[in-house]
Image (spheres, rainbow, N blue to C red):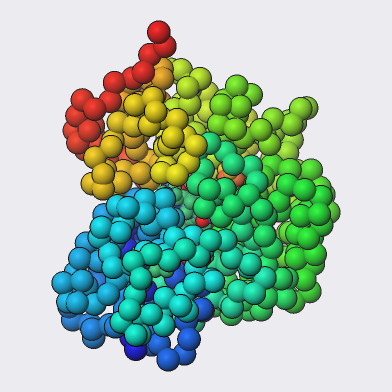
Length: 463
Ligand code: B12
Ligand code: SF4
């Protein structure tokens, strides 16, 4: 039995983007979900993982599979449907799963033979067995998995072409921010994989550099932080010789021992969601965690950097409280915090989130011709109507923000400070140049987007 597991080309991170900007090589990441699925697949299946982000595939020149499994983020949905249509025209059954299939079940059901919602661990072997017997059901629901029994991901099936390997050590997030799909998809319970499994899986990864995909590697509660320390100790003891980056909340900076252990275990950078400059903004999106009184973000960032780890800060533009001038303010504040890279995104109502429900009820989703419009749900296009910012206005704020943060003098200052602190100046330089080069590409993308979206955007003004 031949199984193709396909990651459809992404509008953001595909190899075509790498051709436009070679620094983007560092932004083509492995589709870990498919590697996990492969790990769950019994040996009688011959598996190929096909990642379209590594280059276009000529499926008609390949042997006919017995089953196709497709994953997709929302932004990949249209390409996923094209791939599904191709294989269905050959009478090959197509199963789709992942975040988009879970959040937009009806839309997906119309376009594939079978949909798997939720996490696949508890259900995938049943799907395969049904496929073998040619009796696939239209829908399966995996719910939330007990991830302490998950088999190791098949890293051997995708071991060339990427700058980074990928691994997951926890799932779920209790914080339920309004714009984020994670709590709706992976639940509010913070679930932990057993440390020996994680260490063993790290040893299977060929790449020297690894992305730890967890939404928050350290968690929020004291017992989670204690567990993170145990994990880092075990990783250091196993002498993995890996350098890795991860997402964490700002409380990472509050514990010297935690940071020191992380650095010893190979942590070279953390991605931190600051999201908004003001307490009102944080309240608006429900990110109460960042509201801790008395926190000085600059000091927190410096504490992390002292352990020779880079800090990437993320902010959102388009909140109801955001007014003209927000772009410059974010660039200035992020520079003041001293983050090494800035990743600013447009507030985007992703299906299944609280923000989606709110914006839909207020008729503020401007790009709403689905599925065609999903390709703009990359958080890099303003797909909604923003309270105080018109379409042209919100795009201009983004351009101002990025131009301000990624101006050559500021880049050089950051690289110099990294050199001075002996903190991987090269990685910082590559990251900064990659973003800077994309700014020029973005301008063209914005112009195309404005033409495409026409007059569907009118800013929502307060009455
Ligand atoms: C790592 C990550 C990335 C990485 C790598 C992505 C990749 N190639 O895998 C990078 C940095 C590139 C990235 C980019 C983006 N990301 Co991202 N990312 C994540 C993150 C943190 C983890 C994903 C992961 O690897 N999980 C671990 C694996 C094991 O889980 P999984 O993929 O969900 O797979 C399981 C199930 O879904 C299911 N499954 C999945 N596929 C299939 C297929 C079949 C056939 C079956 C049966 C089952 C199945 O089985 C698996 C095992 O249970 C998630 C948050 C999250 N917790 O999911 C956000 C998340 C997926 N990203 C999100 C977004 C919005 C983006 C961006 C659009 C935003 C941006 N500008 O950064 C881009 C766009 C990428 C694109 N493709 O267009 C959203 C997606 C929401 C949505 N509706 O699409 C999420 C959910 C976070 C959020 N804030 O809500 N991302
Ligand atoms: S943004 Fe981060 S903290 Fe908020 S719900 Fe999503 S994963 Fe949790």
